[in-house]
Length: 253
Image 1 (tube, rainbow, N blue to C red):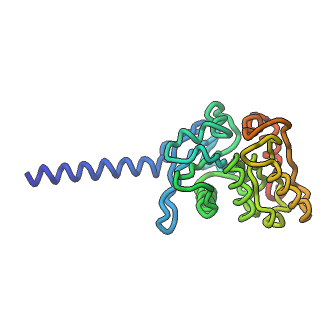
Image 2: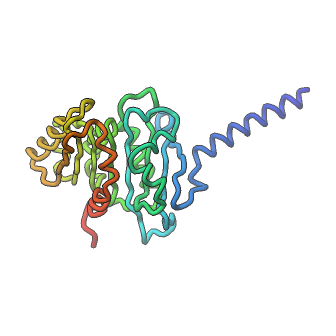
Image 3: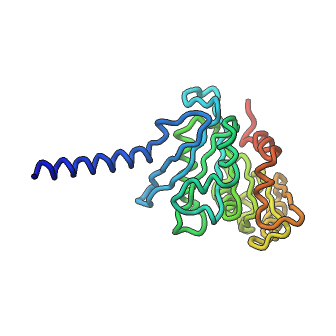
């Protein structure tokens, strides 16, 4: 009887270990042209952060002569939780799901349900982990997000402006007091002027504050008559991806 209980206990332990390992190390089975679920254990017992990782067609981890641009995408309030599929409802992860040649390494985290805004310290860990573990170009790291993710993009960019080559925040407000930190970052902000959730003034105020601080690399597009969903047409526009790829943190030799 003791032997049977021992075997059942060991079997349950191994099953849980395999499940946990497959989630934490899903990258071992990654293939280019695919999105795979990943999980990052956060420092100081802060739990974990789940995310999708997309590797474009032709990506090779070992070919350091060809590093890839890295894009970080932050979703909106409605996609929080523990169902990663919700993250692919909008934006770059939705696009990458249909286009294996999407020309970015794409990292799309999911905010746990208990939070109502992106945690900058967690995002910093994810960005650094992605840089260290993937074959990416440190001079071409891009940040974008919608609504709550737009607000998170403003916040993360202001916290580490030296890290990003360009930022596209969509219908999310930043803090004007951080504007001086963003004067050297290329930013293209988007908003609908009929937005009843996040007023368009939030974006206008942020852009004006950056320009008033001496920033010359910020611009915005305001959609006339568009309500809160200004992200669908933005992420469907090939010009934003072309613009991003032209931006780099420092000139190449």
